[in-house]
Image 1: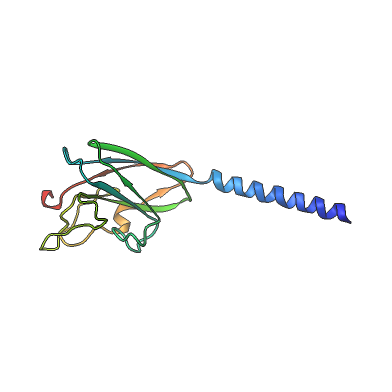
Image 2 (image 1 turned 60 degrees about the vertical axis):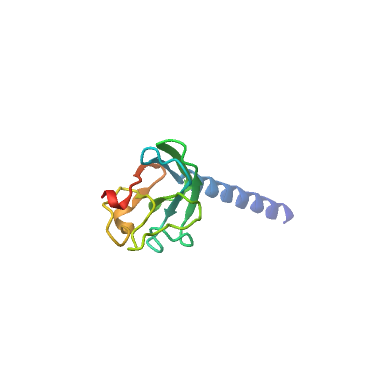
Amino acid sequence: MKWIRILLAILFALLLLGSLSAQERNKGSVELRIIMPEGEYTGSLRVLLFNGKDGFPFSLRDTYRMMALMPTEQVLQTSFEELPPGRYAISVWHDEDRDFNLDKSLTGRHAECTGFSNNPRQRLFRGPSFQSCSFVVGKEGVSVTVDLRHRHHE
C-alpha cells in the first residue's frame, strides 16, 4: 500500500513538471526598438507594457511590466521576455528630469516626448487607445518599433 502511494506521488510530480514545461514553451517575447529624437539623450525612458486597456497609456499602477532605460543613442533595443500569449500595448515617454511624472505644459499637452506601439497619430488632449496600439504575442514572439515624438511636431 505504501509503494502505491509513492508511485502515485511520483506520477503526479511528473505530470505537474510536464505541465509546467509546456506552459513555459508557450510563453513569448517582445523585441522592442525605440527611436529617439536626435540629440535628446538626457534623463531616462519609461517603458510601460500593458495587457489590457485599464490605465493605458501612462498609469504606472496598471502596467503589466515596466522598465527604465538610459537614452545613450538614437536607437535603443530591449525586450520583454516570458510573456503569456495575449494582447499587449506599449507606451514610452522620455522622462527628461527623471521625476517619474509625464510633465505637461500649461495647456495640458505633454511636455516630454511620448511614443506608442503601432505608432498611432497622437491626439491633442488624450493618448491613443489600447486598441489602436495593441498587438498579439504568441509563443513565437513579436518585434515592435516605437518612435518617440514631441506633440508639437505632429
